[in-house]
Each structure stands twice: as C-alpha cells, then as structure tokens.
Amino acid sequence: MKTSRKALTLVAILALAGCGNNQSPAASEDQNSDKSPLAEYMGEGFVSGSGGGGFRVAVRAGGAQQPSEEELAKQRKVEDATATCMKAAGFDYVAVPPEQNAKSKFADAFNLPPDKFAEQYGYGISTIDWSKAGDDETSNPNTKIRNALSPTAQKAYDKTLNGPNATSNGTVVIQGGGKGGPSTSGSTDLGCRGKAVEQVYGKGEDRTASFKKFDSLFKDIEALQKRIDSDQRVVDATTAWSDCLADAGHAGFKKTDDPRNQVQQKLDALTGNKPPAKGGPAKTITGPPSFDKVDATKLADLRKFEIDLAKADQQCKAKVYDDAYKKVQYEAEKEFVDQHKTELESYRDEMANR
Image (cartoon, rainbow, N blue to C red):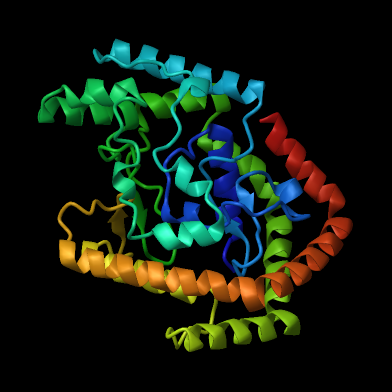
C-alpha cells in the first residue's frame, strides 16, 4: 500500500497546519491528474491519478487548489505569531502574507504536461536539488535576514525559528527506523514556528487524536487499494507496461513504482542519504540532501538515466497502462464512496472545520 493509515493521518495534520511548503521528489508526479471519486472527499493533498499504480500523497506547486480566505487568514496568524516570538527572542523575522509569496522556482516545471516534464526533469529526483528549493532571497525576505548573520548566529536563528531538531532549510529532523516507526522521543520544541502553528491550529497531539476515529476508514482504503492492484485488468496492464519498457531498453521492472524507486536508490547511493533499514537502529533523517558534494560526472550520468527512463516510463504508461488503471480505479472508488459516504463526509467536514 502506497499510503498507510499513519501517512494519511499525517497528511491531514500537515494540511491543517499549513506546513506542506517544502517540495520533494513526489511533487513531480500526478501534477496534472484530475480528482478521482475518493479524492473529492480526502482533500487536495490526496492525489489519486492514473498511471501511478496507487494512491499518492503529493505536494504540487502550481495549478493546485487555491486556499480559502479562512485558510489564508490562519496562515497570516501563524506568520504574525512567528514574528512576535522571534522578536521576543531577539531576532528579526518578517511576517510574509501567504498570498504575497512568490511562486516556487519550480512552479513552471510542475505545470508542464507529464510528457514534457519527463523530457526535462525525468521524475524530478536527481534533476532538481530540493535542498535549495527555498533559497531564493527575493521570494522570502527572511532568507536574506538569515544569510546576513554569522554562522553561529544562523544556528541560533534556526533553533529559535524551528526548534533544535531543524536543519538550515527548515526541515525538522525525524528519528526513523526500528519497529516502532518514527520516534517521538527527545525534544518536542518546534521553535517559534511550531508554537505559532499550535496557537492557531491546536497542539499536534490533539490533532492526531482527533483523526484516530478515522482509523477504520483508512484501513478500508488500504483494502480498496489492494483490490484495485489485484484486479486482472490492472495486472494485465502492468505486464504490458513492463514489456513496453523492456522493448524500450529498460528491462526488469515489474511494478510501476520500480523505475522511480531505482532512481531514488541510485541518488541515495551518491549522496549517502540511505534510509534506515527496516527493523534496524534509528537514524536521523534531515530532509532533501544537497548535491553540492556529489560527484558532478556521476550526477550528470544519473540525470541522463533518469530522464531516459522517465520518458520511456511515461510513454509506456500512456500507451498501455493509464486508461486501464483509471477505469478500474474509478469504478472501485465510486463503489467505495457509495458504501462509505457517511464516513467520508465526516472526514471531509473534520478537515474543513479545523
């Protein structure tokens, strides 16, 4: 299952808190997909498009649903509270109205048709340095403020703004690995920004608890995904897609996620950003790795490989997979919505009222 119950709950919480600003490689997929019957209830962050082989949570720049005035007002309150907290700590911070934020430097890329995106960016994994997605001083005056500080002061600024578990780009460190999943032990200080979010949206523990009542719904969605994947029409389409890729010179891929995962694994090997082993010891995850220290020749080779693979992948999906998958998906989701309408409406209302 591509999206677990815990992941769905986390997405809901992040959506409520307005924290989904950092782009990631997942943003390059489904950038132009339409809403499926289930996505109408699960919210903007729940993208379920054909050709993906499953439900995917994606942060999409450009073309995304515009936030309501109520949501914009909450984001303004978060910015104002953050500025007040930073000032009290002795730092300058400019409250940036959300509607005045400049578009992401990658927004134009995400508005490209899937085939054009693949031609230029592949999957957007090795072709975009996500660690620098928010480095444009012109889009955020606080970047300029921070850059004017000494290295020592920058560390103090980052700690004050995002807490001791944050990196310079605002990514919060998560302890991963082990059978228990992400660790919540240690400091829970999320800095001025985290305090501001709590003031406006409530405490994270409370938000998490409020979504536990939907565990049964999320479990049913997992079962729905398994039914879609095991439908003979999808199985046959996946085989046709695999054969198509092999004919294009990319043999050995059996699942539609395999090409993307292979690119990610190759990039992880280059950057040393290997995820913790399942069931192994905890490891600190600090967000998108920088490409600054990656061998330029090897990175260029990987980018060429990614683009070539992504182009073939996209073409084969469009040729033999997408239509079949979407037909099965929409049929199954429509039936699911009919059977779970009350629960889905309750979930949608909970999201809208938070």
